[in-house]
Image 1 (cartoon, rainbow, N blue to C red):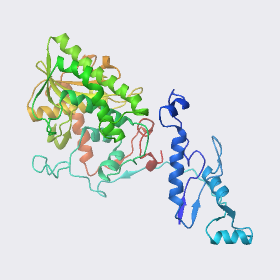
Image 2: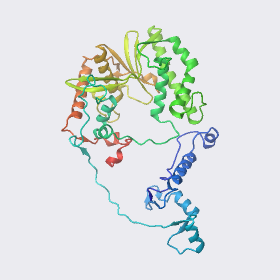
Image 3: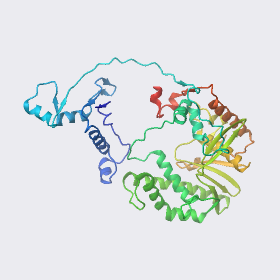
Image 4: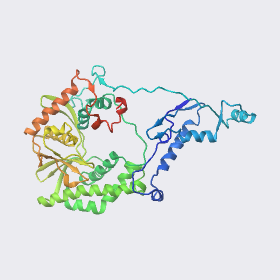
Length: 446
């Protein structure tokens, strides 16, 4: 027995629209996905799903919606045309025999009226005493690295945005559904760019082992990478990460279109470094690490907690230590005060990318010793916005600075609240800002 819900047209199959200037006939000619491709896949999955069921119940809504009257899914009509006879009507001998032989399907239509009431706003609070919080303090990672629970910059950012979101992801370990798609999502796109740049700045060793220690990257190496290696490396990473094809397979369709965009973004990062080297009279960068995982008991103010981070790149430009984070979107690089890292203003979201980098700077100083660090957000879409600016001045991080003292107090307050057993996990107070794209918005009925 199988029950399929929401069998309305434009829901099952979903109405597909492709945001693209490329017309449909060109998409077909170049083997790119079309809306018809998505519908064909849905149809295949639907018929495979019901093919062995003895009884199938298809539920659809008949009430009028804002977009017009609701229609039953085309799959219901197809089943009626291909296989159906009215189960309530008298059958001929031929129809009864067909039913017994399994060549026809008896169908019964049932209409149910349901009263709809508007629900009250759902207020959710989860007491920490009812669901034990992972211990982010003990054992410390310096005592038991394998079993210690760690906070990260992204999880702290999630808690600031919405404590309930933190609870669902990091306490209940819920994850968004993985949806099959012929299109490259933003996370995959960014990952390919990161992996491409790492091939230049901190490549793995020839035997496949992870590199340790410093890696010198000269101007000549950057120029050679752009001219002779960039395209081949992007193709290899796309095949490995997105298409799952063997190395050397031809890139076609959407991936081919995105390949040039990825190459452009990677080139912008390299050109920005080349320009810096030439302006400051250096012929090389000294790359200390890329994407290396660190775990440590991080102390912020009087609070200590287990922390983990992986910086996109840590390097030396002359004597200047830089911690770099690549961003393909419109991440904020300018703030006026520390408050802008923790609170949304009326017209702009808080600078969570800068909060992430300042946490990295604190952790690096604690691991490697006190020194001045230049945190940088490489905005690959707008390279001229690269940097981290406070009141229009490039930030140079120092652990005992007034900026970091205020930052440490704010982080200490956030983490103390997170660890406090008396403070429940609550919903965000700004649903218009944080709930729009949240995968768990349905839990809150927002």
